[in-house]
Length: 195
Image (tube, rainbow, N blue to C red; front, top):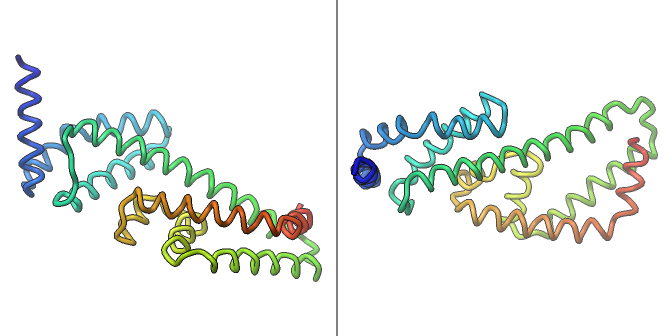
């Protein structure tokens, strides 16, 4: 009976929050923040990243309260944590890969004319590949892959749903893979010059 009262009060809290009640939002925050933080921290082992993820979730929750559809608050919040963790890990991996290539490029002592020309051709090829993408997909790709923005931030910036951002990202990655596959020799020449 006690758990039924808790469920009912959480449901009432959710309804009040969705109506714009700040006290209900604060109560939801206090009820779930620590649990969500612990889930994120256990996966990431990074206090700052875990805190930022949880804060971002609550900021988006408040901003989107008028349009969000939530039936079970706990399910919604912990699903948001899971996807945010995945986005964070994905971003860290991508950032690490680009950083590795960039550092390798900067560390080349004898940057001769051939290497410079090859690198400039590669940059030009990538730019041309981006130019054939539709505008929205190109922007999503640029923000995610080149500027390392998480999906949630891109969605907010471009006023899209996260699903739409993921769609554009998947579409642009497929297009870029096909496009760059045709220029594989150039990429291999540049990479062999770098390493």
